[in-house]
Length: 394
Ligand code: GLA
Image (cartoon, rainbow, N blue to C red; front, side):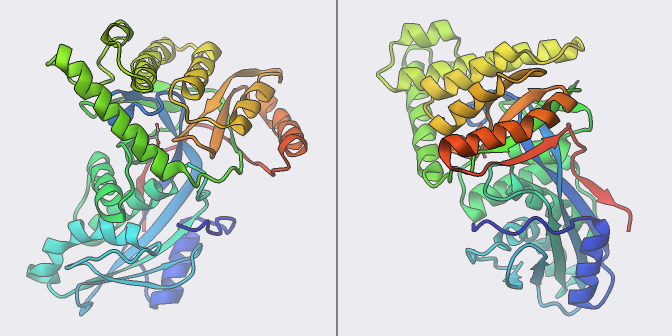
């Protein structure tokens, strides 16, 4: 999807105004959901491993209303995107436009309600405003999916548990929009809490909140992630192949992440599968160590963050020189605990974890030096762990 304008004000009031202006009435409901960054646990979610994301202080707001005589159609408008969307919720097809995220989520929720009963033949109107940056790896798509799921379910008179909203969003992303991803992003957007990190076991979808008080400086390297999708698919296939080979020796191995580093080494997998598997195995164990620290009220260790980055660079091979440089440069600043690339990699964002005022002072300096070094203008956001998805009072 093209990068869209997310510099406009996004709030419950803004999305209500947009809905009213476009559809000439009040919405039935408004819901919002944040973007996310992952603190540690990269490329573990689709390998049955563990992740530790936080919601960020950037949200997507969706206002929704049922339209009588709507013919089972979705109508959608966004403050950030061009064009007004129209799509069937009864027989949805992909349009390759931004409203596919709404269609893919709203259709499975609305299909039964719009097919028979009191709402038979109705449609749904939706308006969107967002300040989650797009194209940076901050899960703007998960935010719109999860917010849409909650808003549409409520508008139809039902409710949805946040984890159901996450699963519906993930199915829309992978099955309807057609982007390969694990479940981390939608779970993070749906279940995050202010001041806490979300520990998610992707094998069981069990979650736990652990205190996380540091601030996070998010730096978008402005390196376009054009190779991301194909490289991501290649890595998924490599991991699946590594698991198949390991199961020849350990038939009951539940997932690649469940393999210990000793098992991976003993398996003598062919390159590069050996490197991929070792990353996944060690990375999920780094998450467990990070969670142990946070549970005890201690800060996240810089060593774990840097260890994760080095593993992504050397074993998973999804970093870029620009991201490596940003990590090294950030570590020179006082008050910085650790830094690493976050999200899929191959460009996109990295995070710096530490003291809020130190990060606020460091950000512009790092950005300036980065521009000098690479001629690229980084985008920077300072955030704390923010509240996950919620239905707003209307
Ligand atoms: C992308 C995917 C996530 C996860 C990360 C890597 O963000 O959407 O599901 O796999 O990459 O950790």
